[in-house]
Structure formats: C-alpha cells, structure tokens
Amino acid sequence: MSTENEGVSNRERRDTIMQALTEQDHVSVRELADRFNVSAMTIHRDLDALESIGVLRKVRGGATAQPTALYESSLGFRLAQMPDTKRRIAEQASERVKPGASIALDDSTTTLAMLPFLAEIGQLTIVTYFASVIEEVARLAPDTLQLIVVGGTYSHKYHSFGGVLAEQQLMGLSVDHSFISVSSVNAERGTFHQELDQAALKRTLVHIARDSSLLVDATKFESSALHRVVELSEFQAIYVDDALSPAVIAKLGHGAADLHVVREPGADRRSEGAR
Image 1: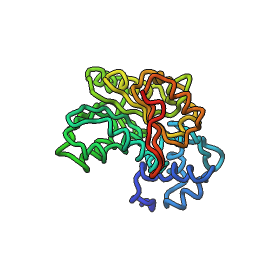
Image 2: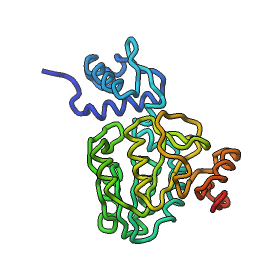
Image 3: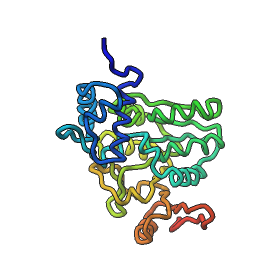
C-alpha cells in the first residue's frame, strides 16, 4: 500500500514547487520528496510537467527556475506582486466606467483588481475568459454584475480559457470598454506578451472595444516578451504608476492615448499628458 501523502493534489504540489522557485534559485528532488512525503519518481513527474510549460529547467538532482516564464505562469506569485500598486491602478481605471456599461477583462492580475471597484458601480456586464474573474464576480456581486464567460481550451498555466474558440467568441462581441495588461511594454514599439495565443486574445479585446485601456506597472517596461499585442496608439488610455521613469513618462505623454500616472496615497493624482 502506498505511503505517499494523498492529501495534497498534483496541482497544489506543483504550485508549491513554483512558489519555492520564486524564493530560491534551485530545488532538489530529495528535499521536495521529503517535504511532500512522496517518492522521488512523483517529484520527477512534477518537474517534467513544469518543465513542459517552461517554468523551470531540470538539472541533475533537481531543477532551476526560468524566471520570466515562472513569473507569468504562477497565478499565486503574480497575485503577490505589487498588490497595492495594482489596486491603485485598478481603482483609477475603474473611474472610466459608468453604470450600464459592458466591459471586457483579460487574465491579468491588474485587471482582476478592478472587480471590487466595478462591484461598487454595479449594473455592468463583464466579459472575460479568466477563471479568477468568474470566481470574484460570484463572490462579490453575483446580482449586480452580469457575467459573460468566453470558453475554449482551459490553461492551468493562466487559470483561463483560450485558443481559437475563445478568440472566435470574442470577435463576435462589441463592448464599451476593455482593460488589459501585458508582459512587456516598449514606449516606441508597443506592447508584447511571451505567448502567441495570449497575445492574440489581448489583441482581440482591444479591437472589440469602443474604449480600450492598458493597465501596467513600471516593471513591465523593464521586461521583454516575444509576441506583439498592439501599438500603444491603439489604446484610448494608459494607466501606469509613478515608479516609471520621467523619461518614459514623457515619451508616453506624447502619444495618442490619455496617460494617467497613478500616484502614491497623498500625492497629486493628476494625469500626465492627458488629452
């Protein structure tokens, strides 16, 4: 009879491994097997599964992190990053929405942070492919936020639905607002994501909305990603935090979109380069 710990699911164990790799550069098979009270073979299967989605690289006796992919792949880790900054950006972006509007939200944790503020507005229709948005709407305001869920192929990596089916369903809709975030922003070259399917879904959200907003913190200007989403000129508004360098703020301020620089509490909450 197996003596392995059956109280922890594969998903929970793999999420914990990813979390461990956000805190240290290397994990060993032996340490993980002891930690979870499972066999080394079980840990090897976990590492194989995580390597297949690009979040780590297996090495002799364990694994090392692939930092960029790990950041984007672990929902728990993303939720823990800069929550106060994301909340401030989300709060100010929510001011763009009026009662009765239809809103499309992507699978970013920054747009997820909008939901408490959207729930206060009420009488909204939310379109999404992000399972966490579905869960939050059900928890916060099931009676005042109407939910339209776009289906498709479920991705554990992003806790969302995607693929061709999701993209086709989105293309059949027209919404008042869309709010997205991305993996990387370049003030001259536009917005980017590290995976082609995710980039396509975000691009579609921009194109189906009368008014589209980009919500990004300053760290997104320091990272890189492979696949272009859209040019910055395709957004009607851009929301950033005041940790972004003045030089980049100045470049963004000369663009076509309204630029909103979200400041620390107590600071002047004005928009830079607003049009």
